[in-house]
Amino acid sequence: MKALRYLIPLLVLPLFLTQCEPKVDPVGPDEPKEQESETHTLTFVLPTYGEGASTDLKTSWQAGDVIVVHGEYAAQQVSVTLSASDISADGKSATKTVEGLYPYKRDDCTSTMYASYPGDKVDNLKHCFFYSKFSTTATQLLAACNDGDTFRFQDVCGVLTFEPGDEYESYTIVGTKKEPLGYEFLQVKITDNEQNFTQYTGSPLINLEGDIEGGVAKIFIPDGLSMAGAVIKLRKNGQFVSIYRHTSPIEIKRGEEFSLGDISEGIEPYDDPFSADILDLDADGNANCYVVTAPGTYKFKAVYGNNSVSFIEGVEDAGVVWETWNNGEEVTAGSIIKSVSYAEDYMIFHTADEFRPGNALIAAKDGDGKILWSWHIWVPETAIGTVSGIFSTDCMDRNLGALVVAQAASAPVAPEAFGMMYQWGRKDPYPASKAISSSSPATLAGTQVEKAPARISLAESIANPTLMGHTDNGDWVDPSDAALWSDDAKTIYDPCPPGYRVPTSSSNNFWGDISTMAGWSFDKTNGWLTTGSPASVFPLCGYRDDYSVESIAHAYDRGLYWSSATGSETKPGVARGEDIRPGSSISFKETPKSRSGCVRCVKE
Image 1 (cartoon, rainbow, N blue to C red):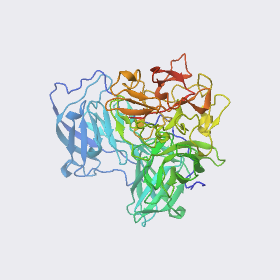
Image 2: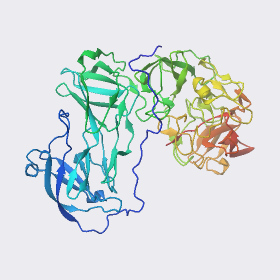
Image 3: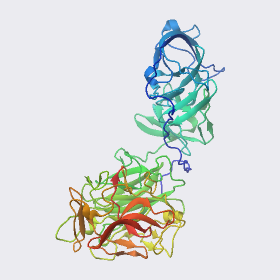
Image 4: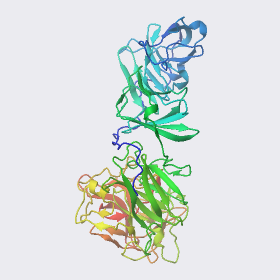
């Protein structure tokens, strides 16, 4: 199905746009020092704006305005509330005697106190030093350092305005290349010898919403943020009804207005692709796998794995790659996912009218049909639970992709309990065995799994998620990449759904000799192993071997469960996983990355 196009093709945002924690002075004590407070008569001076400056910028103090003044510690900061008698006749300055001040003296600057406005947006850290931290960027923010007893405030943000007309009540705006329009928090540093208006920031905000008052919208945006253009959707009676596309660059400077002016002539009707009954799958985060437990229409952001601000570039189409019922039955196309589309940076899919458990892979494509990224849609038959005591954090009660929980019974484990299989470091799954002791994988409807003649590049694996690269006793990707999965953090290639990740190599107790754990037992005939207390069942569903990736080896009497740890620097073609061979050996060992094993996701 062709994508619903409303935006200009996007560029991928740099991966470094993630939340940064403010630094802490390593020599500063954690608690306020013994120090007598001081009383000062302080003067607060607003910025001076040129003729024709935006009326949305603060040009005069008002009674009730709250300014926060601090030194080294937030616990000692003072909230100063202005009264009418404090304010000068022109409103440009205010003077007030303030008690309980604790100046912060350093050798590298002469300023000793710092001020922030508005007070209700100030969110200073315990140890704030000369920083002013704000909890939002969606309003005018002012900060200053003292020169004696005078604070001359400076703007932190600029303002973007446009006039759509009186009929609209609110808007949402997004840059055409998904540029940040603000931050979850913003911390600035202003002293007498240093100014940094984005000293530390929270996660970038890609789109902003706000009200339209008197036919005018005003949007505060931090200094230096710019856009190649913007898309503005306009809401009336609670519904988006119109859209405006601004195709020229927008440059934001502190204390200045960038006005789009009257945009009414460029406004077009808007056909909203998102009905009210569409369910948002990434409300708890983004991932390469999403779990669906009921029929309906779903959406999630078209981003790279768990990076919520790195959007897929150039999407023009979307579709189903394959579907499986996790067994040997011939799969009916469209029995799990009826249709897939793309609109306004979201993947949208509809489950089949007759809801059926299974697994599917859907993809975003360019105009030539090339796959740009793909996602695993997991539709379990029974609700997914969690188990404690197997790893150092709770894990799922089944393998990734399993439709049901494996049973430790006197009957063969159902293939629907095997889950999916993964070459180490890949985000896309492959079917496990269609039945206990069968070397044939579960059947697929759609694009079939294909064996590459040798190793493949990472780009080839993304464009061809059903192509299995390999080398005997080694890697599937060329060049080898030790960071595809990581012990340090969930990566954009991690195959687990939101809130879960591939277990780390330090996630005891599972790694090593399972037979030393409570609840240990196995049945090779029926293909199961139990371990832990209370016991959890791990199916012995074999693995796709590195030298024969098309078929399943040792289904029913062996198992391979991956960790996120790669091998040593001298062995880039191997990673670490639990090699389970009951009656012979059970060990956490280096295993060829070409081999496909199971994943038991753990909570992040």
